[in-house]
Length: 386
Ligand code: PMP
Image 1 (cartoon, rainbow, N blue to C red):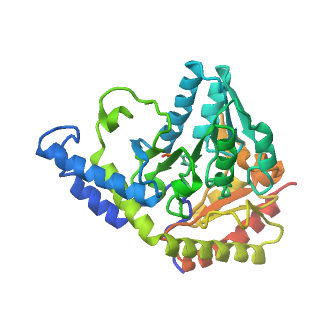
Image 2: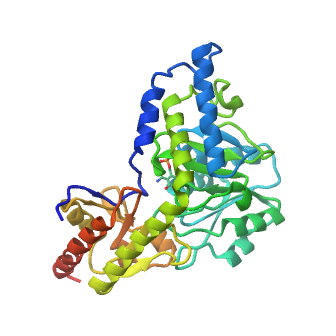
């Protein structure tokens, strides 16, 4: 099969859905400032409120306050800043618990707070990347202000027992946040059922535009703005509304809800087709993450004796776009912290590739990958001096 681009990096970001593009194009005519009292302002505001309803519907949060943000990084920072402020104001609860495999917008924020003297504990995860509940129980206490556990991991796709964590946290009077950015649109997410106080999401992971997301705040949960200024969002987040992005996110939310069951099953089938194909055609591979608690479109595989970045670049030459979990820190490649925290050994962590599927991927594309990948791994392993 002749291929130009096979995009298997949907956990990094997704393409805009065509209906989202159309809605955003017409939203450009709706340029009024949604805070203005005149007709143009009122029309923009009505469309924005419609998006808010669609988003609330998608995550089953009818009474929660949905605060539009620039994305999940801002939403996550808003929550941590809120609890930092509560500690500063003299709350007797002075500790925050999170996990070792959160997204950097949580881990780095937590580490930053630690450098300032705040107490943050990182709950360990098991080999499949799941929070170890017995460790969480040990960390829990009546001095805990906030527990923040992501719903689905961006790298290995592991789905966390957030509902269980929330139950435990409630018993100790702590508030609960979940970063649901990777789960939205892939699995059913009910904020009511999870019983969390705060939930972060980002439109560009479910075929909406980049630079827009939300922090969803349960009715009655404490809140303090991170961005101060105008009265937008009932004073919860200042800044002129980004009409077209918010409208695009609303349409993306409606589509995500409509297609959820069908797309979830389709993505899982593609993921399994690739996993089985890789295991059948390439010796000595390790599939990372959890088999039973995994986001449907995520497949993370380690290929011992082949460097992740080399695999990525060879696949790129074939028009196949994937990602590695490693980060380029000051010119050197650091192995994936998510895999290391899951107890994966350093060599396996260096040779990992994340394939992440989305709504535009097909079985033909999986076949093409399975045609190209085995020879790439073979060549790289032959070149390896180890
Ligand atoms: N959390 C998770 C789990 C993510 O995957 C991402 C995006 N990679 C973010 C937060 C950050 O989202 P945004 O790009 O909207 O800031």
